[in-house]
Amino acid sequence: MKFELIEKEQRYQDEQTKEVNDMSHEQAQAQVASIVELVADLNGGDYEEAIEAIYEHPLSVEYRSGWTVPGRDMAPDEYRVVLCTGGPHVELRGDIGRGDVRVVWRGWGESGEYRTTLEELDALRQYVAVLGVHDNLY
Image (cartoon, rainbow, N blue to C red):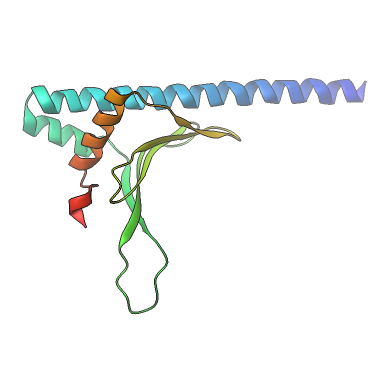
């Protein structure tokens, strides 16, 4: 009897985790769709208003440097743009100077990458460029 209760509880927890992870993937998809709309406004609407909307969209833009020795300047190697936190968490990540953008999501106990279309990837690159995350910045 006790074993059956443990099994039942484990199945329930597994179902809850799957639901949250499905929501995380869906949230990543929704965030990308929102960015595609913002970039469409940038390319076809009021430019200044679109720039302001993009600046206000992310929760944070952060940089991380690689290893360096004391006394040397630290230059950023990677960036992340946090779009939402909690359960789910969605962020954009990339290496500075490479032009890559990855959409990373995290739920309870799992994480993954949202696979973008070429149109979405182009919009994401324009989005991070507006935020100042591009090759010419450094």
